[in-house]
Image (cartoon, rainbow, N blue to C red; front, side, top):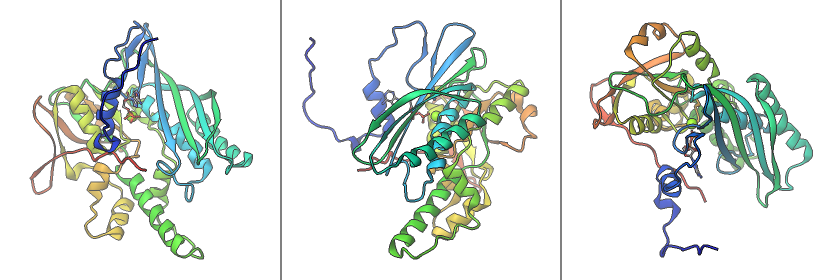
Length: 350
Ligand code: ADP
Ligand code: MG
């Protein structure tokens, strides 16, 4: 057997961002199968040889890191686990078909609790016409870990990667940004108050939209459908799971271009602004939009020739354009100053 050689020294995980770490770990894995069309580096892996290609994506949800049982209903959690996988299929301009669910649970959970989780899984599967076809169930010593794999398909001539954005393309984003993170902030605030005083009844009135955005995101399959109806193939696309800034940087990096987005064009819901002003006078809604994450909206670029087809849409917002190779990714403020976009660091909890 080949001897495993360990490198000397020890590098702490905290010294690495998520993406440099993935790059480092997967460096040297060159695909050897003709059917591996796209490996690591996009929202899904792309597999196949014909006109219809298969999409595969995996995501993991870890209790205490990605969800908190104090305020996450299991029904919502089951729904969300499937929804975030479907969102990666949408980001490739594809259609979801099957899902596999791997779960590790401690004996803190009852059969009824897991049934509740699966009721959420079923709801999402039904809503997006996806079949649960397998998975695995294991014991965990602490809490719950959910790993979801979604399989989908896409026409080879409509499939959309992160890498195709071209100079002067328009940058579009669906829905609104920052609302899921605002929902999380509200839940965390109520949790702190509850812990200090268990008689306290959380008052969540008026936050329904942001709470739903965080607890029960909807993958934007309606946008994939809209693009098909309008006969638009985006030049690049990604879903917004880590915040707009990080996703724009992925598109720029992989398409080898820069970008310019306009702060006043960023779609932000009034509940998001309200939560920010309640939290602190220096918490800006635009920061939530850039760095909040978990919105699961679609960020994509289109050629200028498609402008007419998209400009009347209520659900798609044109927020900027692609600039030439070598230029930075920037946001232009209403005062006409430019701010270079940076991805927020990956939080390695625990
Ligand atoms: P997304 O946010 O779209 O789910 P990620 O940021 O999780 O994507 O991952 C970026 C890319 O890196 C994807 O192509 C994913 O398949 C790949 N990837 C993530 N984690 C690993 C890992 N542990 N080993 C190999 N590839 C990984
Ligand atoms: Mg993604």
